[in-house]
Image (cartoon, rainbow, N blue to C red; front, side, top):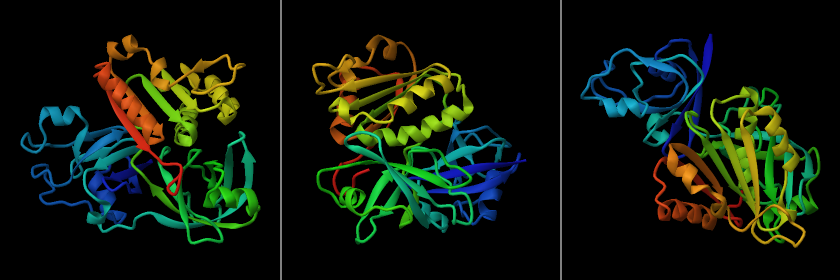
Length: 343
């Protein structure tokens, strides 16, 4: 039996390799050309330490001066002593360049279609089937897309989980003016070549051990669609999952039917749609997303919250958690600007 392991680094790069069941993590990494820094290889020096963010593992020996009990409780590991027993993700607090390994790949793909999913949003469908192997990425990560006919690149989160046929989706906000928006409206045709670089980013789903809150602003929803695709495959992650999805006007809402389908596919999943400037006919939640958080519930126990959207939304949520003195949660976030670096 083999497992797929992702190595995530502080510079936002992710590398992947196959690991035999119960194989030492460091051995598998070196075999794949990922040169994790090392020294003693005996569980003493802590040079090869990382942190398990998801997956199952055991450790043969860890010296108490290398990792404390508190470190072990936080999932910290020594690569030279870690035996992998499932698909897993490990984080290392240094740049991938220290590993002398190949970074994100340049991939040639074909555009297969553009699907308008709201008045202001489209899904770009891409086929990277000519790539010699499955394109690996962690749901929540993003790719840098070359805008055909220009020298410009733009970053967009994957809006689907990885698949063996390398069929990909990207959620694109259609701005009144913009290099990618103009291309999508005026020149995008099925069969065009699209080059992109991936995977990138440190925003991805960790091990789910407590209630999960996903908070999306606008096309920040894209990162969560990939995560929810992954959860739909599992069916039951053992914890309640709530998605808050906020937009300016109800016409900006997209993929609502897809979100509703997740209710049937994911046990204990709920969606909350929030519109900040709705029309008079809107009967759902109004205002800003933090206004609809339940402080008592969030304060009552531990939780994980993932936030993806424009910087003001991210800062508003961080501010709300601080002002309300909600301290029991882990907060993971990704900001993006809907301009030159728009996702």
